[in-house]
Length: 363
Image (cartoon, rainbow, N blue to C red):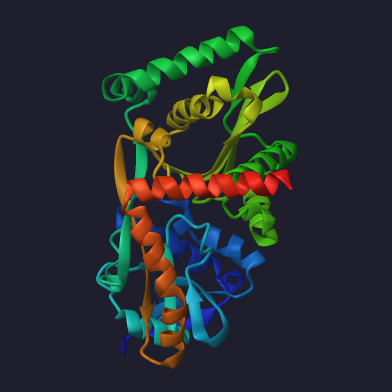
């Protein structure tokens, strides 16, 4: 660490040279070009989360590492976009490996918490308390090759979904059409309304009730940068949207983020149809991978061709502040982990959440 200088800056203060260096380091890392790990995502978050910062490692005049983070009261830090970011970690030159606690001290942090740490982050090796599969769809050889794989891997799923798509085409009051990159803000508003209703129906916290998340999504929808652009995909019947998805793309990866659909069309499984059309359009646009994100879901199991790994956990600098945070967070985290690891118990928990949501809706 002594051979390097570390500066802490606001993301908006990064120079053009530093942004290019960040992009080059990501390219040299050789892993998937996840848009959540690009400088433009950190800068977008910083516009709505003023506590966002970036530690910049310099060797001489050359920037050789970046670590984005959010700094809260008492030096308690989190990953940038914690709670909505699907890939997190440091961006460092190969061979640069500062100790995790040295990183925290350089940033003035007592702890740093993450919930989607990217695989292959040696600085934070051993800090994860739990790891999760993040299913992916590989369309690098084209959509036809992917569909051929589905015919072997998930034949019933593919057959049923394509049949429902044809049935929708016959019975819908209007032409069924798909737009991969819809720019209409009204379609984005519709998606957010559907998603909010879905969160409430299933008894989960409504992310779009948080103004910073809503504003962030709108900003990213307008963003067009090499490594991180917002993509809104919509399935229409005539002029009426019936399913939509908003995610982020780089040149080669589409990170799936917020999918939802109009419940009135549920019998046609429009969300599944939408995902197949997204895979087809992504392949045509030169994208080789769709990252479906962590979390168990039957549709992910049916669509996936493989998996990445992400982790959650925290790094601490020993002290009273870190200990207090650990005591506040760890019991709840362990309880959630206990439930997730037991499918029958997790199913009962989901049933209970749905029941609570119905009771709230009936008030």
